[in-house]
Image (tube, each protein chain N blue to C red):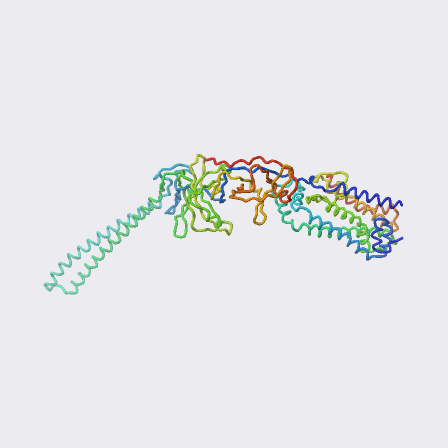
Length: 236
Length: 392
């Protein structure tokens, strides 16, 4: 079974991922739709956030997140930098976000291209795996929908920058302080990231002849590796 | 069916997360500082900065160039008029006097010599004249001798002029010798001694200012030399009361009066703005003040007694109208238009629109800037701001 149209695939990627990946295997052009959805939701979410949030409050948050070990001179320099960037913050966030998505997808595409060589029947190109990873990131759209709902329903314009990670391990379970060494890591691990990893595993099963256990190992390996190294660095 | 349950559950979890994360703000009430207007004196003032200087001060500079042999005083010492302050090495000046003296003596000798020569020639000429009259000598010899006598007379005049010249040189040399000893031109305090033994002082010339040696000042009267911006200068008048805040006493101002207003604008250092020099004579004080100290000043251009006043941050402006946020008994705020009077740098007089029984929002600026008519606030009473003392 496979998705017949790109719009069918958008529903299937959340409800019947295997169908979506089966369809994607033969319809390479669908990747543009996924990219448009991911980037579009990010741009809407970011624009709404920076258009609503109190700029001074954003600066204050960045200042309070500065390391307490900084010297007064370094601190003043950083504060000056924040104030200078104030007007450009939105564009840096959107531009940086878009570049990060593309770079992240490209790295993962390269990784999947390499591991797919272990399957003699796999003949997907780098572009195919790039498309594969974009579709695996589709749960991020729900993250942005959540962000938009939170901004629209907020009773104040003093919005926290942590709103983007509202479904993270830290915000849902741990509640660590911004100065905690594990703060950044646990803010990065979230419901939608894990959902994305799960989609990668399912997609690998669909696109390769890997066994389920192999697909789980190869699908989770990059994220486990990144978070593992991050954890060790935070620990040290 | 199973899938539908999973989807419904996922939507419920998603909605649950969003509800738990909903940003409500701080209970829709804003914490702000409030205060009652007070009555009292307020002065409209102009701010300026500058430095303190002594009212009477003399900068000692050298008229001769030479090496310092002795400095007999120290900075901060009180000196009397005529007291020797320092001496230069006089060896060169004394030698110059001796040389000039020798030249004077030589010139006197030259005059005497010329006089003797003239006398001798006159005797010879008398003798030749008699011989010429008796025909014993020719006219040419007689005329030559007469000519020599005339030249001898000129030589005397020349030698006398030379003598006068050498006497003048001697006088200059003596003057230079006397100027190698520096005496205090007035009784006062040595505000600064900028020279040390062994250093060389340079005499001032047309284009070069000579070395600063010492500053002698009368410490009983101190002036504040202020730089007043050109936009404010029209409001400055003689005798205006001024509070001077020296850097050493930032909270206890000195009082004084404007005694002089500059007549030409000068470019301020480090900016393109023009400023006028305004001098303020400080009232007598027991506190120690030193010349060169930096200071800021509030020059009172007008004063009102017993006016209703508020901290300046409580007053907001919309177009040409001024307003404050009035707090009612239910802690709801309403915009109240007021007419304002004079202002100091921290307070504003309110001519109408408020009484001392009203409660007014003071700050902080960010939450206050977002207030709307009818908003409920959580008031925090401010402690009365300390009145500025005028300690002398």
